[in-house]
Length: 110
Length: 111
Image (cartoon, rainbow over all chains, first blue to last red; front, side, top):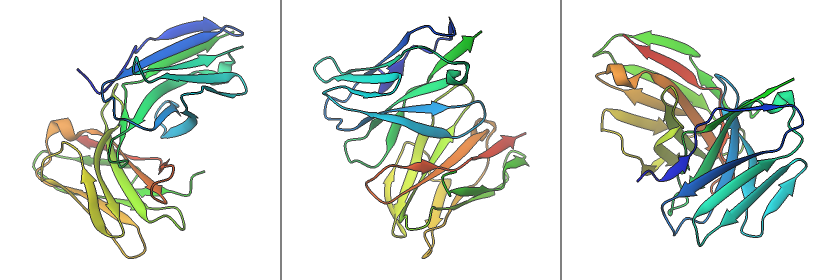
């Protein structure tokens, strides 16, 4: 079983749509969780950290379910500029390495 | 911009050759991590350097080695290049254990 698993998509949605990405992780001892965004041929950039209580940043909402080892990202009112690959990331138990999923590709069209 | 720079931007090598990639970390950061991202995959952790010492290593063979210098810049060396080494190599700097900021990457092609 891969350490971090995501549906690779692609997700093709119209502007204004709401889209949800899901991710599961295998190490129950993991402590830190993130969503990164990566544009084509660019470096990954931190979108948001994910907390057990859930957190929101504008149109983006992230949730963590430790019991199910499940992380989600909800994007409301999608914009063309949201088109990118979204990477689910877990920090390893030692707090050293970021463990990335393969990424989910989102394409928002007008 | 993250303030993390990498050189070169692109590189083409042939099988069996050796390559050195360089990373200059953000000012004040004492930790550099290296990742390999193959096409269609997420980045994979190679190793991390903290204050010039290796501080963790992923599942990569010994022909992948690194250095961190007193100014916290870093090098990744890969010996005996294989076709599967073709990838985007990313370095990330941080003030351990805080957020890792990624550089733009070096795209390596092995022919």
